[in-house]
Image 1 (tube, one colour):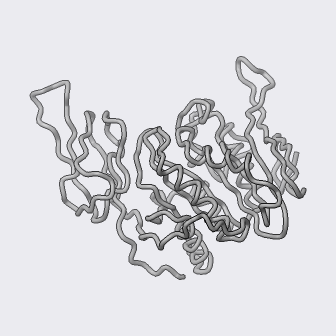
Image 2 (cartoon, rainbow, N blue to C red):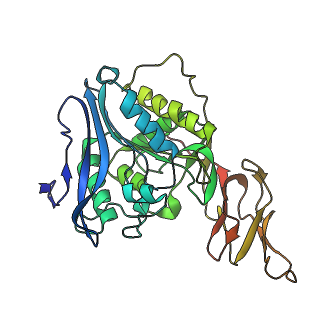
Image 3 (cartoon, helix red, strand yellow):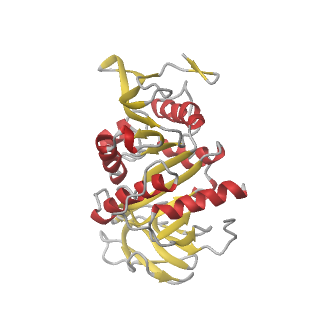
Length: 341
């Protein structure tokens, strides 16, 4: 099969040009020991009506982040065609192998989907899924909403996330959409300049790309789940795809933050991490951030670790055990740059 100049073996049961509601899947061939001619099946739903914009809603990029998949599943079941003005492409669990394993990366190829874009139709399973999103879905869309949480390793302040873009008009529209989500914080995250994320690829394709971080710790947060429910509807209302729900509280303007170089406090030792501050605490560069304890050798005093930048504690590691290279804390700094809006 060929699409937009790319040869691939993927099949999709949804017709993106058809009006109405279609619940289907796209399938990636998979030949493994116990299934020579099997597929990886990714659920996808299309709801199309009217002449509004096309919005891709994606959850489950990482398999241990649950709020997004729950909310998108609810939308698939509950939204009627007449509720929509535009086209919704809803993928509640884009990385089905990782979701099935409750793991950040795919158990099939060990690849982190959010570091695999723009993908490769001739590559591993994860790379093929990314290629389908990048080369087939992104060209159809105007807006991309990528729902994440902290997963098993981090607890993060519930927030909307935007990708930094150089085009002033696209940046303005992205900032306004990020505000519309309704979280108390909006954070500019470039993942240390990483271009292989879904958000970065969507922005490079000219889409308005909005993400989230919604709690974490490998659990379902009651507050973050409720924020996700209202936030997704707020964004769709912002673009006119859904009518205004008078029952939903209109969001206040969020505080804007960014992750500067040095935002991540990294362990250089193996031990047990003791954090000192709750999420949201204001901290300063050079301030004591926590300690690494060596619990198997009580003769050793713990090693102090320190913050590198001023800001608030935005993310905190969940597992106590750490090894060299693990991220223990993330500090978000108030954004003072030109918003172009």
